[in-house]
Image 1: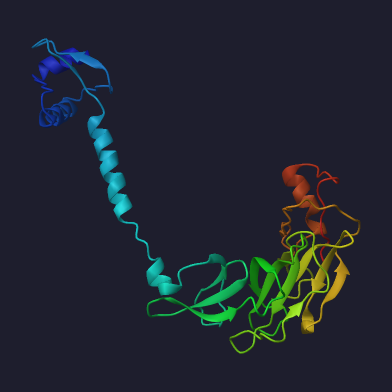
Image 2 (image 1 turned 45 degrees about the vertical axis):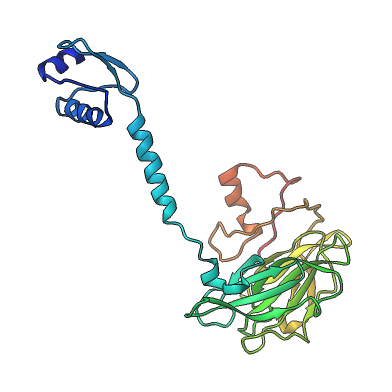
Length: 284
């Protein structure tokens, strides 16, 4: 049965003068199980009237729903930070081991504030402050990596920075001390990196280590057990890293370490690995 015949048998009189009639016509057509494509002209066999269904209602619904969803969004910055709501969010971590997420914020590229979570508004309050007066002169903080670098079960804070307009990346470490930071005994590594270092557990001792390219161009890893930097070669051959790099670590063969033994797994997944473009850090 053709569409005009269905309209005739159902005795549907479609009027398009008002939006209400348009909605009623669509509803009646659905009950008659007829299909009217959007934008198609349909001629009724009973009255000879021509009408066209345009997607005005659909557009209205989309706009209405979109605006309704937008109204559900709220700016809670003031509730979270109060008057201290400025700076760049750099990292997250449970700084004082209360199972609450704390926020590390950089201000003016030269100051770090640690906002501790609280149950009362503002829900994040600045408690620990590394001011630019503590840091070397003309220090520009580029990243923050919280972690327990000496294995004493207290969170330390690692800063990467460019000092005195140098293009090299320096690493500064502030040691955790009774749920705060030791502002006088912080450590500056005696080597600089060509780019941002990669923090990873290189030797599998559950303590984060620092991996990267130092000067002269050689890939090394720095261990910080007992707060004493110990540097070791990381790769069996020299590699020129890209800047910025895309270094990463992954355990594909489930031996709880990431490195040389995962080469076969990567070959199986991705095909042959180009030795000129990729290098693998050996396990252990």
